[in-house]
Length: 196
Ligand SMILES: C[S@@+](CC[C@H](N)C(=O)[O-])C[C@H]1O[C@@H](n2cnc3c(N)ncnc32)[C@H](O)[C@@H]1O
Image 1 (spheres, rainbow, N blue to C red):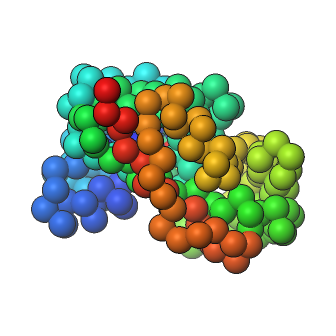
Image 2 (image 1 turned 30 degrees about the vertical axis):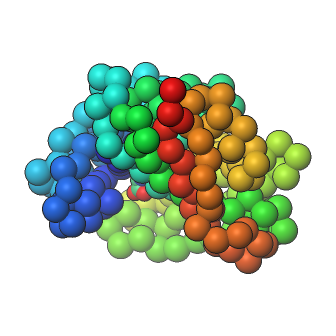
């Protein structure tokens, strides 16, 4: 189960390894893309805070690029509790986010690029180490001269914070793939459904 599967790039990999794959996302547009990227995956439109799946039916889940943490702490707690509900006992959750230690060391970031067929993308972000919230301003200038803007936030958790939040939700934080330092690019965490 891929939580916040987007356009399905990880579902495609999962299928190539011979697994059954279920992708969940709230965006109908991205699920449409996922149907092309990963034919054979089961795609479900739904909210990570209220998964449209039966309890105890999933062997494993993963969540790449912070998909569970694009809202408030309350949203994150609900999403973690939902994963715990639908996982079988002992089922695993692997999640990845940016590394909050790295962001705290360099809180301001600027990125821009020309995306073929789309336009010029500019991204400015500012991480508040006190709250763990990164505020991102993104703009796109299309080749037709149209300008689109959006601002969103992502909550990044240090491993200890994530462990506390997960424990309340019914998940045991087992480990990160490596100890985090300021230069580790990503936080990759393994959690497990807590045995009753
Ligand atoms: C940063 S993108 C990552 C997409 C994908 N995991 C990848 O790595 O390509 C976050 C994805 O999560 C989805 N998402 C965010 N919050 C969600 C929610 N509450 N319920 C369902 N999907 C959500 C978005 O629609 C988007 O596709």
